[in-house]
Length: 330
Image (cartoon, rainbow, N blue to C red; front, side, top):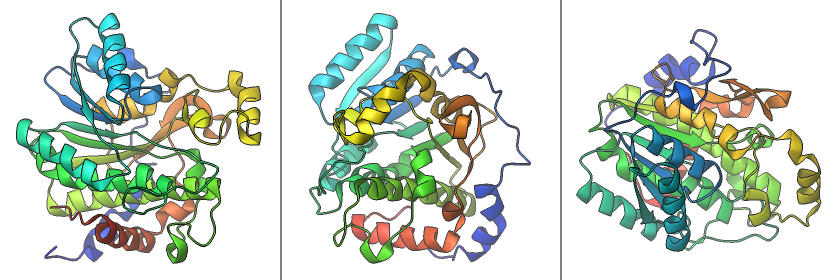
């Protein structure tokens, strides 16, 4: 970019981290409080199950035109059928994308840029958590970093032109309470020397936070008109554990034992839906449950991990991400 971001970082740093001067969500905010989304175009990654499905269902019910983007067309058709059972006149469609394959990400972005008049909301929801063995993406990146972060970084950058055509563009990116345990290991970003499933997951979700805040700084500096926000669900009952460490793992057994204390997927989706729809949602904010160590509880501002406040790391990560994905935001 023609200008540096030093001034923007200095001016907007507090907005990306602190929330004391902002209006907090109503603790009991629910989908009944969502304003009409009629005429809005929304893209949800990973919307065939779990919280992504709940996002798509609630937004379709509110009148939005919803695009579910995921890997499996059969599961996409099933999700659309389920939504239409509840919302017969739902405007919902499916697009295929594999976030762990940058060529697939580029293909989706090209299709959307060609046919959509604009994009109002992008919900970066899809994720993989803690597979026991280190996997790699089609591009050779560690699978969790590729799916949870790099694929979304690339997709969002490629859709910035569509987002800039919206009068109220929002990007909501899903982090996790695991980000508080994360660290950006730039010397071994792809976990090639040592793979710890949970450390790699935490790093990927910390990367999402860094990126969400940095995107807001760029939007403000360049007058893009995009509100970039992060959200986390606390601990919600989804397929993430079964598809990651597995229900037979030590983590899976602990998770199954305590699952009665966790959020449902619909409850876990509320921070995302608030960020995506509420007039009071603030760019650069981080939303999540506020009780029980943020594992569940009333909606509010989530605590930003200290590591996510290191803007030098955020800028370094942005540069690395541009190099790895070949995507530059403009």
